[in-house]
Length: 408
Picture 1 (tube, rainbow, N blue to C red):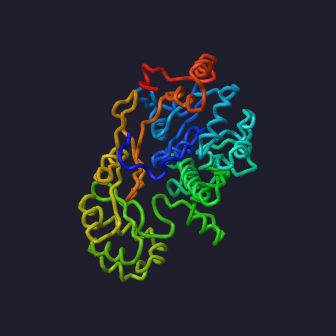
Picture 2 (tube, rainbow, N blue to C red):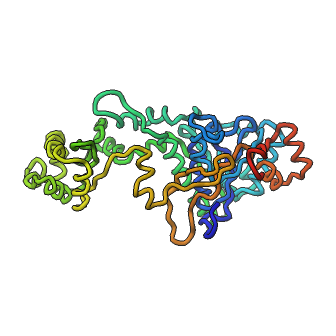
Picture 3 (cartoon, one colour):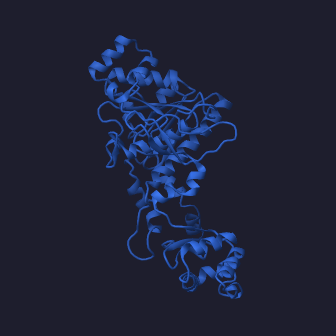
């Protein structure tokens, strides 16, 4: 647990009814910023990602562990009136923010409709993560929306089948938009005293992150094509083969191209009308690529990287995930931290990249076991010991085994 400076969201309370990735990623970030986050999980199965594996460590899936630190877990059966009463009490009397990603109408069946909760507590901020825009109630899956939302048509080799991005990018995009929207809602509440509802869909998030490619399509009316590892509007800006491997080179302006040409001992390229300006290089990218790789093949990757870095040409190695996590850059950032999880005493985690000068953002508590904090949270919701025992005995709630979880 972090000690010392508190995070900028200290005192903010988040009731997290979301599962899988987009919602949990956003709420983990709020916790990293100092908010207190209570994660409500299904009494039997918990968050679906607890079972997504292998790999597993200490009985927990690596997937679940990736996006659920900085939270407390309460396990409830929301089909039971007693559990519904607990969530209503937490939402109305305890929480600043409630996040959910149930199918539309599900919470209403439990007597927990968001409009009703905000009517009881006007300061409450609610947020829903859905797959598709309002009016389309289909469940959303990252892989499906990567395909339907256009990003797969841009990813992969120039010819052949499209590829998904190597992580669930659409979920993560939505999680980031959700997080920033919630921060805006908190700021608005400070000015107005009123909460509001925020809706974020994976599909809209994916469209927004098409960025310059969407803009080019809209202004030209032309369908963007795949460029493999190349850039549609810049050249040279792709992967290049050297004598012993491959590196990335990303030339963003004519000055950088001049520097690249000098390092390659081909200064004449910068005066060639085919390559003088970026517009020309884009039109002649194939020929330029062949010329560059013919020179790069003469020396190993590291020599070229050092020479190009010395003249401020953007370039880098192509690392595997384990190499990236162990890199000098990751070590400089302190990107990998270790936490004392109940069943994984030295759990490694990747911290989020905020660096504040005054208030600290950092991993605070390890991902909770399923129902690890049920008793504590039920007590905070106003239940006495007898009512808590009844809830546990009836199956309306579940407490993690103390032998496995340590302190409740």
